[in-house]
Amino acid sequence: MASLRPLRTHPLPKTFFTASARSLATVSPTSSSTSKNDTGTAIVLLNMGGPSTIPEVSTFLSRLFADADLIPLGPLQKYLGPLIARRRTPKIEAQYTVIGGGSPIRRWSEIQAQGACKILDLSHPATAPHKPYVAFRYADPITEDTFLAMKRDGVRRAVAFTQYPQYSCSTTGSSLNELWRLAKKYDPEGQIEWSVIDRWPTHPGLVSVVARHVEEKLATYPADRRDNVVLLFSAHSLPMSVVNRGDPYPAEVAATVHAVMEKLGFKNAHRLVWQSQVGPSPWLGAQTSNTVESYVKKGQTDLLLIPIAFTSDHIETLHELDLEIIEETGQEGIKRAESLNGDPEFIQALADIAKSHLEGTQRSSKQMALRCPMCVSARCEAQKNFFATGKHPE
Image (cartoon, rainbow, N blue to C red):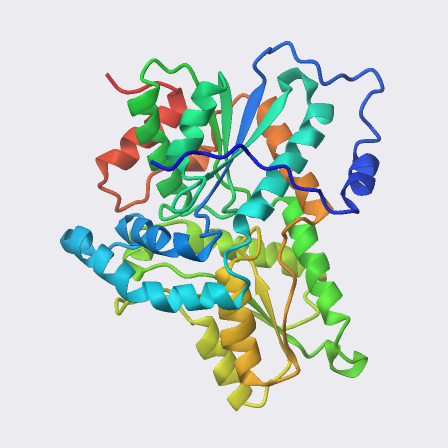
C-alpha cells in the first residue's frame, strides 16, 4: 500500500478570493468558523483519478482494468484486465508524456477541495472546520489510503462528494462500492458517519460555468460564423451492457446538456456525443471522433467540443480531444471549450452543493436508493443500504 502524502496546498486561482468575497457578502459578520462539532466535517472528493507521473501509469491501468464496475470483461476479468493493462501501458505512457508527464487531475482536485472548504467554513460554520480530502479510484491518493488518513485524523463526519456530476454505476457507484468495502474493513463500528452527494447534473452553478466557457470560446469565432458553430457536448461513453441494465448516466448527461443549451438560449445547433471507448464490445455512441470526421466530410468545419462530464482536464481532454481529434483534423474552426478546473465560480458551486447537502436531512438523493432495473448485484444493494442508513447489515 502506498503511503498517503498530506493534501498538498495549492495556490488558488488569482480571481478566486475576489469572486468568493462577492458570493460570501451575505454571510453575517458575526458568523464564525468555530464549530460546535470539534472534529468538523470531512469533504471527500471522489474521482477516478489519473497518474501524476509516468511511472504511475502501469499501476493506474492495472487498477482500472481490474474494476468490473467500470469496464466489465466478464468471468475472465482477472486474466484479461492485467493483459490489457500491460499491452496499453507503453501507448498511454507516451500520451501522458506528450501532455506534460502526467495527469493534472490531482492538482485540480486538491485546489477544488481546498477552495470549497474555505468557503464552507464561512458559509456553514455549524459543520466547520471542513477538512478537504481527495479519494481516487485508480491513482494516488487511492481511496484506501485516504480512508486510513481520515481514521488517523479522527474524522467523525464525512461527506462523500462525487466529482462525476452525472451518476453512473461505473463511476460514482464504483467509488461508493469501494468506500463501503473499506468501511466494513476498517470502521465496522461506524465511527465515521457518512453521507453522500451522489449527483448534481443540473446544478445552476455547474450549468452557468459550462455555458460561460462555451460563450467565451464562441466569441473567438468571426461574428458572421458564430451562430453556425455546431456544439458537440462530449462525455465518456459506457458499454452498452451497462446502459441496457438501466444505468441513469445517459439521461443525466442529456439533462446537463439541455440545461446548458437552455442557458445559452439554444442559439446554436448541438449534439451529445461520446468518447473513450475501450475494447471490441458495443459502447454508447455516436463516438466523438467519428462525429467530427463525419461533419468535416459534410463541410461542417466549425465545431466546438465541450467536455460535459469532467470536472477538470485530464488525458481525455488534453490528449484525446485536443490532439487526437482537434489537432489532427487541421481545421482552424474546430476548438474546445475550457474545462472547469479552478474556475472560481465552479469552486463556489461545489461549496454551494455541499452547503445545501449539510443543511438537509437526507444522507443521499432519493435517486441513489433506486437500483438499476436489471441490477442483480448483492454488493450494490448492500452499499446503497449502508449509505442510506449508515449501518452495515447484520
